[in-house]
Image (cartoon, rainbow, N blue to C red):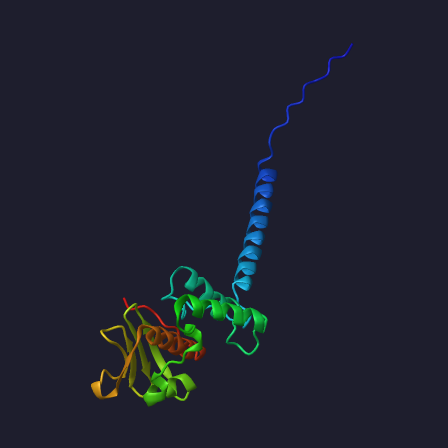
Length: 197
């Protein structure tokens, strides 16, 4: 009777490296797909991802949820909203009942009505060269050298070149609406609002 020889299989280091490389490649591909999908799903019905700062930032609790639903998620102020008119009206009525005031995204920033530089920035009539957005200040510099400011101050205000003669006082809600309005206008020009160092 013949005895079977024991065969010893040794690991092939080259084959192990290929296997590890294949697994790494699949992990990379899946990661790219997940990141790409999450970026696409972060967009709201108007096709734009919400700004870092939204008009709902001053709201708390249920008021924040209703504001965010109406202004950002459902884009009820956009002509191409993807929510029903009835759904938008219901959210709006609930917000107004809960807070006793209108939704921030239905408000307009008063600064462009009273200060020409703000009007020019919002309409895109001037070239913006710099934008700095901190918690207490929004600073926008134009190619002409003029600067538009929205300051938290007491009271909050919008002004041109820090000139008291060209200053308009704002409520807290108006301040936030103006900050978001101006940031969106500037970012539409391709200028990023950065934080100061």
